[in-house]
Length: 129
Image 1 (cartoon, rainbow, N blue to C red):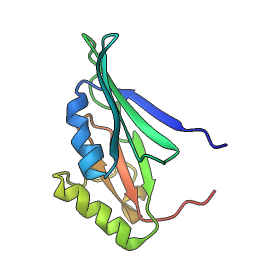
Image 2 (tube, rainbow, N blue to C red):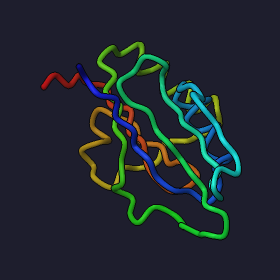
Image 3 (tube, one colour):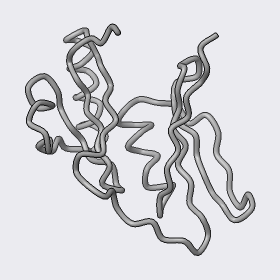
């Protein structure tokens, strides 16, 4: 059995993140909640994928922006046409590429910054370990 991986992080604005991950990256809103013990949140991913992301906001708590430009999520997209479609989907959703902090990611990838300053790399490569 392969367990599901949840990557969870706080945000100051759950609603602002949804267009980036849903419309830009093409992920699905799997679940959303408001006012659960003082927290609002959303879980985003693909329905059958072994991972998803959870973004939460705690009432009365401020988290601010990403601590550095090198806080990354990396999606490996081996097919060049699928990779190009992913980049086009991001820009069509209104998100422009940014220069990667580590220039390695610019060689075969494209980096985008979410509204909290965290970055996502869409890498045109495969990963098979």
